[in-house]
Length: 374
Image 1 (tube, rainbow, N blue to C red):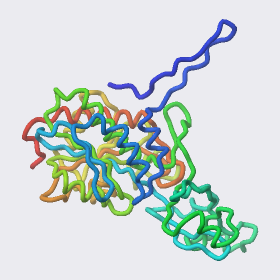
Image 2: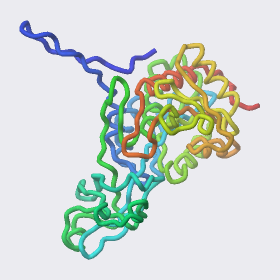
Image 3: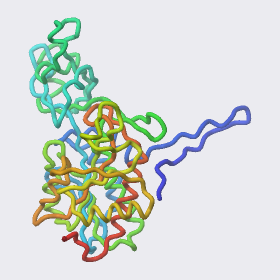
Image 4: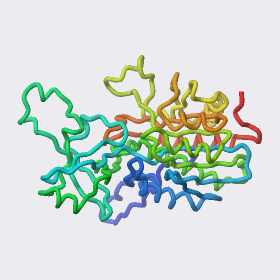
């Protein structure tokens, strides 16, 4: 199995003990987590995927929705599509009042309680603009108002402008913003970032293709790793990518809820833990051949893994891919995550590495003619 961390060499002298060695995060993952890419504005994440994945691909393409499609072993059979989305939540400027305050609409599913009091970066044609999300202070509310969560139109972005004209000289209607929360290691291999959902999945599918490229003599399948666009607003990139790739088999990679924190009842949400390994989904959205093969590969290689049941189409790219064209045998792997759709999502990086290892093993296990029909 590959190692998640590469250890930096420490400097030492005869007068002092060596400094402790610090773990380094893979550059590809770190770059994706830094990129700002709300749905429909994925350019920064696209550039990261291009830079890290394209050199390992036999063919590389992009399309009208902003997907990135990297192909390895084009003559191979079966055709396996791996999908992880590169878009994230965001805000979009929709109105500027006479005093220069920016009002916005939300991109993707926000918890409104998380929005106020955040620093945001607005991506503009002239570069990033720093702002702060504002609302009426608690001191200026009556008791009833303090119990309410403000509506979107009751919040704004303050960029320090004094007039509408001044604000519109710096930003345009339609510009997008993201929270200014970057990646940090919290403790050990546990990291926190603004958009592990789903930069983790995009990294995993791209890194899987990169590792398979070093083992291409063992590979029977054609593998197409797709960084999908616009998942957060309706799995739109996956819908068109599944049509274009026309795979026999597919595995979507996203984040899933780690339920090992307070106020999360496993009787309602199942039992999955941070650090427990990739979550293998089972249900109507999941092809039984893929489920069985993923579980068998994990068991054979001793890769930590866990299971979830979903009796409906999942809230991931898997739901679009499964019904592409004449139907695609589809699976879903999820990286356990705490505090989904907040500015501080928590992931154990060991789970990300184990998911890459499992996908590599799955791809190498495929034989000609294994199309997942049942």
